[in-house]
Image 1 (spheres, rainbow, N blue to C red):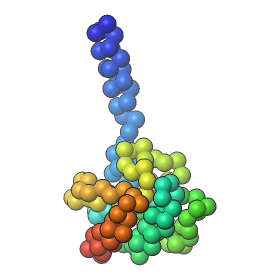
Image 2: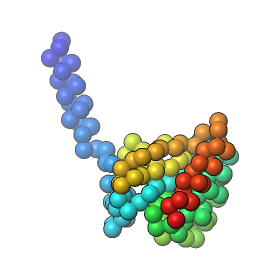
Image 3: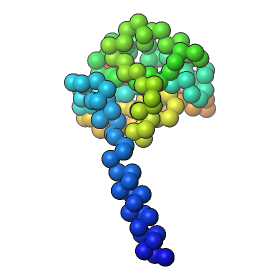
Length: 146
């Protein structure tokens, strides 16, 4: 019995190894030449979750479209959310229609991963509870990266 459980555990661990890439590997694979050490934040925008949250988030992150210290990952079709600013100026945008970013173990809803020296420092996932505080914190912290 214990051998069987041990064998299953080893198979699961070995089987899962290598299938997940890190956030930084995702960024580097999506955009050659981009390095997490050069980024202060990774913004993730999706249409999942609170629509009001996502609309407010778009307003906060839109000014960051030209910020070279930020990568913006968009996994939204534009059906529920106006993503036209990201289409118009997509130099810092990574289009992620296959949810590759989510599979890295990153965010499942819109939010920001703040980095320090290429490592994850703070992760904020938007939530309807405390939305104004979250958006305020995100806006303030993003403004420091300019």
